[in-house]
Image 1 (tube, helix red, strand yellow):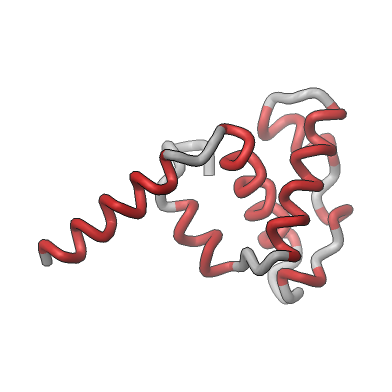
Image 2 (cartoon, helix red, strand yellow):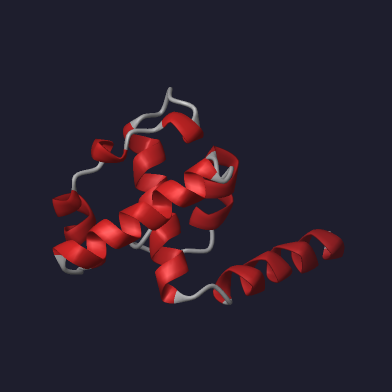
Length: 97
């Protein structure tokens, strides 16, 4: 029980050390994964989540939303998948995941 709590605390600490941009990219990657639940993460179409949705969710400009969506796609292509997304979502503040 103690080892599990320590592991969870370490994971939360690791997640907390991500930059805001990295956390945003992961948030958008989760949006992309949710938009195409049956698609392998490396085959997801970036158009599945419109820039307007990214802009609204992150409260950013269209240019920034496009850049973050590209970062999210790079994450997906590098192997970030549903298991990673589920783990990351656990460390998002309420209402942001």
